[in-house]
Length: 197
Ligand SMILES: [Mg+2]
Image 1 (cartoon, protein in one colour):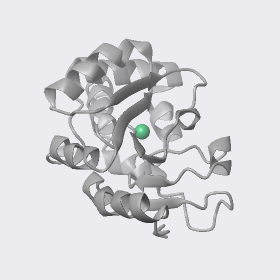
Image 2 (cartoon, protein in one colour):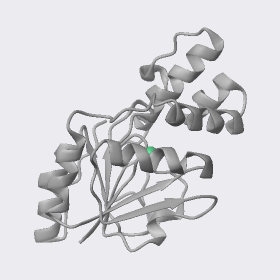
Image 3 (tube, helix red, strand yellow):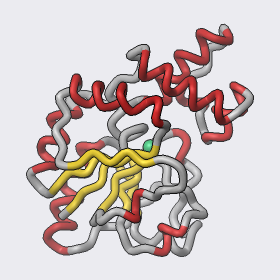
Image 4 (tube, helix red, strand yellow):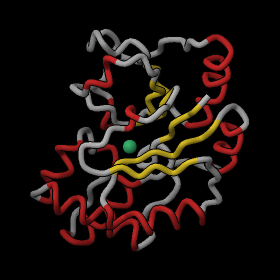
């Protein structure tokens, strides 16, 4: 079983890191709880390209930290269930800092797939994906790849029954919650549906 794990919002608290950059630049006090959509963040700085640059800066300055305690140990446990493909869509400028951070945090994986442009995570041979930000109008909702949705302020809009194609999605509140679900999926090829509304 090949388990895809996204980086930003699942392994790394990039949002908190970039808000640190934004707050320093503008003298503001934005917090992660206010980040209820990605449009919100690009609105603050005025453009998507500037936001992406600030995200790179957050990684470069070491502001981005693991999203939860002992994440390396959790991923080590996930690696016992299946192959771990760390998979993330991101700008080229962040690659070197992200790879270094994963190493510094002691995260072990089988594959590291960094995508850009219009490449899509679910075009890779993944059996199940842990992600925080599936795009609701993306064709991957037509696939049958289950998604474990890592709960974050910006994905609260995804509700049970809201998207008819979104039939294989389960909300989790920490990466460690994925472990029993991954074991169940490996054994039964199914996961319980759980979207908190
Ligand atoms: Mg993400």
